[in-house]
Every structure is written in C-alpha cells, then in structure tokens.
Image 1 (tube, one colour):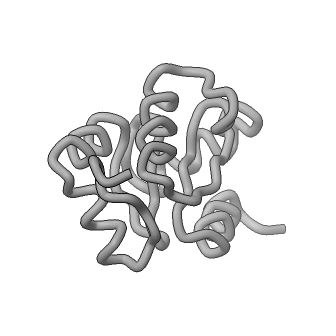
Image 2 (tube, helix red, strand yellow; image 1 turned 180 degrees about the vertical axis):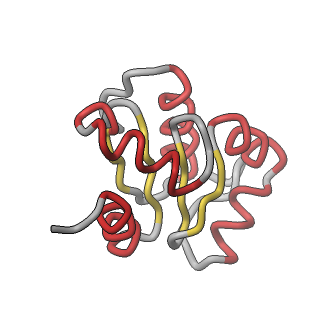
Length: 113
C-alpha cells in the first residue's frame, strides 16, 4: 500500500499546478483557500484542487511533505510555492505570473486579461 507521501507525490506528478486546499475550487471552505482560488482563476491558470478536508491523512501529510504548517499550499510542477500570504504577495508584485510563465504554465499577465 502506498504511503500518504507517495499519494501526495502522485497528485503532484499528474498536474502542473496543484492547490491543496480546504474545500474545492468551486466551493472553497476557508477564506485563505478562496483567495488563492481567486488569484489562480484571475490569472486563467489551469490547476487541480485537492480538498484536504476529505482526507485527514492528506491534510496532515501535505504539511509534513512541504514542512509548511498551514493550508492552502500551492505547487507548480511539483515545487512548493507557498501558502495564501506568499501567493497573494507574489500575485500583487507580478512575480507569480512571471514565475508561472517561466515554468511554461499558461497564464494571463495581470492587467492584460
């Protein structure tokens, strides 16, 4: 049987952008997850939302995986980017869109949508 860390790696390997969040992209269950969803949607990024509320093992496991204590957690091409505050700050400075483009992830530059 696969470990929870293997399951997390599997989630990350199949999709370029993965958001471990509370709830789903269609129905975020916390304000922080909702903010990251709004940012990704605004940038037009295709991503997969993983609802940590549906699986307590993943909820705890992803915190250990990233060594980051909070949810949501954004990953791009398997690399941990950060939580809500970091993603919001990167978005506000334009750094997030630049980073996504550098990684080959399609997104709109803010103000060009």
